[in-house]
Length: 335
Ligand code: KG4
Ligand code: ZN
Image (tube, helix red, strand yellow):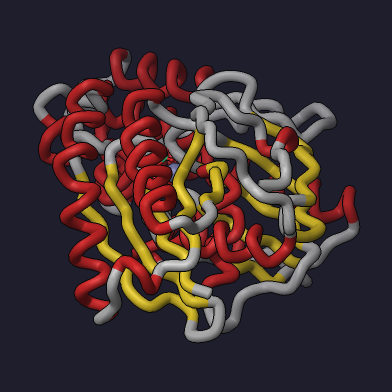
């Protein structure tokens, strides 16, 4: 069975074809980073308009690369949330239209489920069950994953997501958008042990996160410094170290609490090298990541999640559709 995946929840148009026998057949990605860079963040209306321009040409490109025709597609999976409503509606309406025209089913995929399952695309992917740390621009989630669609939310951020905190701290330090990778690169020039930033919510029980205080702490440290290039790098490193350490402490706690020894880390921040080094050093735990190209938003994870859900659940979709800008992972209906 071949599933066409469409991702359009934010600032990336991602298209892919996943074959349940051959694996990932083709994928293409268009990033809108340049479009939004001059505004310092994603402009929702510009994002929607660009998805409209890019989605169909990218679908054609993926089909050409796979040397397949539209009629070779057996199902269409599209991101139905969470995300920007206009951007989501572009992928949903194109996906539904193609499916109606071809008389094939659609699967409304939760974007975070896409991230969560993405390490299973790899040859050495984990078996269920495992703990998943989902770290993106909009979410910081710890989830116990027992199987496809069986997700127990263990903890989440009560304010900023960790990616958002990276982005906001980077912006405050005058770095370019998107801030996460820029801040991580600058941190490599920072000197350890100059500053020690707090590890929020680690000295009390529980698995929730809070990153907005860390962002404010970074800003105050910057304002009270000489604001030299070296100060900037030192603060970037102190912020990153505190964020990474906080995530590692909570992951360790979650693995112990549930009694698991496998950890999956996905979402844009899973590309962060310092985070990977710290988690890889956890004793008695095997850590799995998506390949670097699939850490941030992409169509492959949506096509793959669609194929997994199609195989796991028999229920047919109705002909109506809606998108959900907010869509908690523990409230998924079978497709
Ligand atoms: O999953 P993603 O591509 O989009 C969302 O679903 O949000 O994640 C994007 C987030 C942004 O906040 C970006 O700054 C962050 O991931 N990010 C990073 C790195 N690469 C991307 N944060 C820290 N270090 C990185 N290397
Ligand atoms: Zn994402």
